[in-house]
Amino acid sequence: MSGISVPTPQPYPVTPGMETADAKEELRRAIRAQRGHRSARQRAQAAEAFADVIESIPEVRDAGCVAAYAARSAEPGMLPLLERLSGRGVRVLLPVLGAGLARDWADYTGPDDLLERAPGRPPEPGGPTLGTDATKLADVVLAPALAVDSRGVRLGQGGGWYDRALTHLRPGAKVVAVVFPEEVYDADEHPLPREEHDILVHAVATTTDWRWLG
Image 1 (cartoon, rainbow, N blue to C red):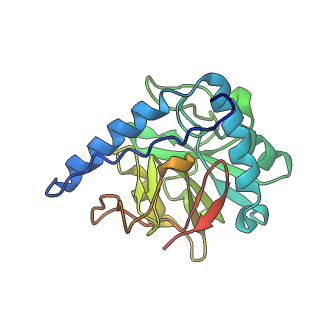
Image 2 (cartoon, one colour):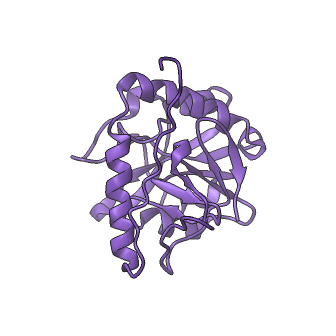
């Protein structure tokens, strides 16, 4: 059976009658566990594939400023894309830990400036912060996610920070969720749980393709 690709299963531990918050947590646990099985080599290969796909999105290709993220080890990798964007003169904004544990943004200036500046946090740039509303500068926001469905519902890590950050978008800016292929759900069959504060995203990008949602 060597050489045959086995599809990655799509966990959906959501049962009728579950509270929305509980359904989200069950999904988060299942998807995080699945992500943890990828090797460092597989994650590095996926990061290059994500860069190829995301760069093919016209709105990214034409953007002067992109708000992105620096990935934790199991998340869809961003470093190849950050380097490509920066290399062609695109301004790249990344989240940072601001004053009083508030989340903020700062400019990406290169991989050597990305450090884990607080325990358990993703890598962050060390330059001056730009304010919590810096997403208003971006033409495109690349949002980390654990899953997204065909309506544009995004399952985040649970802190709600990105949903608050996305309220500052300027008119016309697009939000692209970045997930692995098996983390894109058909809302007719397996809708992701959604709460009132959850903001819909416009598109999704995986290692194989990207598409508009909703």
